[in-house]
Amino acid sequence: MRTGLLRAALAAALALAAAVAEARTVRWAASSDPNTMDPHSQNIGSVTMILQQIYDPIVGRGQDLSLQPGLATAWQQVEPTRWRFTLRPGVRFHGGETFTADDVVFSIQRALQPTSNFGIFVDTVEHAERVDDLTVDVVTRIPDPIIPNKFASIMVVSKTWAERHNATRPQNTRAREEMFTTRNANGTGAFRLTAREADVRTVMARNPDWWGWREEGAGNITEIVFRPIASDATRVAALLSGEVDFVLDPPLQDLARLRANQGIRVVEGPEVRTIFLAFDTSRDELLYSDQRGRNPFRDLRVRQALYQAIDIQAIQRTIMRGQSVITGTLFPEQVNGYVREEDVRLPYDQARARELLTQAGYPNGFQFTLDCPNNRYINDEQICQAIAAMWARVGVRAQVNAQPLAPFFAKVQRDDTSAYLLGWGVPTLDALYSFQSLLASRNGAQGDGIWNYGRYSNPRMDALIERMKTQSGEARAAAIREALRLYREDLPHIPLHHQVIPWAMRAGLTIPHVASNQPYMRWARMN
Image (cartoon, rainbow, N blue to C red):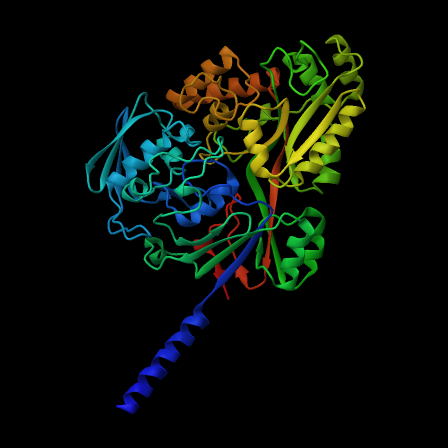
């Protein structure tokens, strides 16, 4: 009897030792923390980088961002306004619920709610309907040729779980609402949420039942511990000391030192994200300005003057240290619809800028506040400070208001801004996403102008966007080209650059670099 107990104890100890030996924890740091765990509340990279570890989308993407099977294994446009999705069998949520068509229908309906920031991905959807347990039909108001591209950004949540926790609609982050999905999650993804302490840490454990582990290229990570570390110096020190294994956003000034360290690997590549400045072109009187009864930004000559006062080469050289691609257009070449001939900047010319300001009635310039994040994009606050200094040389006095991600986004989403710096990624990899989100008039239609906080409005641009929504082939390409030309003529934004993204990790860790700047830990491997 005693021998049997000893054998059992020895077997248990060996099993535990083997499990510990196989444990592979990635300690990950970035400058900012997600402001919610709700899968349909905030369409922001700092949120989706965590949630895509936990939730699966309807349609997946590969490492090259091509469309791949996700929770849907197949899809087809069976009628001009009807798409059919065949769902993956045998999938369970982290809470144990069986995944069915009801969850997909519910998640699409949830993304359509007014408190969702994902409306741009379901803007043409009239309704979704269950055909059977593993088949969903999506009926659109108009023919939509890029529904699969959009559904690669719709994460699926358990219907019964959301109902049980009074979370049938997304959290209203604008109103600073607190609800169950703010700190809790229940997906079908590669990792399940085990701990969430806002601004401290988020812990995720490997989901051994995830369907994707059986596929080629799957990783071996067993746990993710994410920590927001706002200080650049502290993040780098944590990596060099071994306190963390992976830094998503190493500061550019430290890249040479990191590359020289034999225990650190730096990988980099272009990101599908464009950094630009936007202006309030709507109000009769500009907020946070010394101009009473006037809004200088409604005058094209003022916007052009500010554009031509920016020495973008200096920003690339000194602020970005060469880690950017200067642009004069709305999105980079990886996006369907990019036209190289329209990717042309206005020349840097301070004399011309002063001349334009005088023509517009501002010979002595004017004052306003420029809102910027200070922990979202690469050197975001430094970019704003440098541009403010350049504008000062032509008499325009911009007071930079730099804030962390959460209060910055809350401020601009309340339309409480005169001008702001924003970075824009394109998860659909299609031009419509940028035009519709950033430049469509805010007319109440689902997805139109959802990030157009300058309230730019041009009926000609709106008509071109409507053509992009329904047309295909050369007709659609022509609408995109014309819209890009109008973007250059109207100057609703001042485009700056596309980001080039470096990641830094310890030598024994491999995480495939993806142009979305989203580290997919399901593909990560640790020696």
